[in-house]
Image 1 (cartoon, helix red, strand yellow):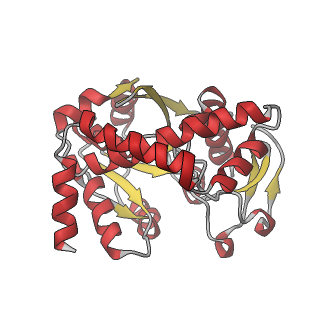
Image 2 (image 1 turned 135 degrees about the vertical axis):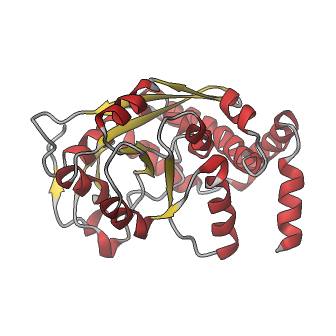
Amino acid sequence: MKFLISILNLISKLPLKILYIFSDIMFFLNYYFVGYRKKVITENLKNSFPEKSDAEIAAIRKKFYRNFSDYLVETIKSFTISEIEARVRMQHINQELFQDAKTEGKNIILLAGHVFNWEWMNALATIVPQDHSYPVYRKVKSSFWEDQMKMIRNKFGNEALEAKEVILHIFRSKNEGNAAYLFVADQTPHFSHITYGLEFLNQRTPVFTGYDKLATRMDLVFIYCEMKKVKRGFYQINYHRIEPDGEKFVEHEVVKKFHKLLENTLHKRPDNYLWSHRKWKYQDAIKNFDSEKK
């Protein structure tokens, strides 16, 4: 394993213009020969965008494979990317929302989707007024890769938290505007944990509700992270505060509003999402389906 870590670090130190050559090779092999999860990707796209023709779906799928290849090499680059380069390549818009939360004395829940490249958000910790930034991660079967992903998310002063620990951590921490928690919030819950689902991209979709429960029990600031790929190697995040319709959030309001915002993002840039993810595999396990669109 030490040998593999050394190899990954050496590759990571290569300039991105060299790493993108590897990305181009991976794209060519994957798109024209391997077809990684092609059936899953095609089915997800067709179900999500029934109004699109087969030619349009094929064009989105091809762009996805290119973006996915870039995502892989950019994730490797995350091992050694400097704070300066990370901040140059990821532009953060509406940063005043973080100062607003600090002034109000409320901790922040950041909600992002699997939009490329969410792994490059780590340098946010260096520019916000909050002293503590907690990216949330999920355990994976390989302890090696879990350690590597945790290492990436701990860069720049972040304090990564495992998903099973984060809700209790938030409840036990002082809500004083000095902490920000980052959820990649469109994960698919295990079928045994599915209690709620909604309509997302024209499909019955099981969703996590942990962060939604926080909204009804604590006075927190919820912010949607809208990711945009400006050009190769450069991204932009536009932060949007999620507000309740009434005086305070009601049950499932935040989870519905987050998925609506993410849906709008994907309609604008459908090729930049992780379509290889089997997000809809547990549709039949939904016990409480909400068909109301927020």
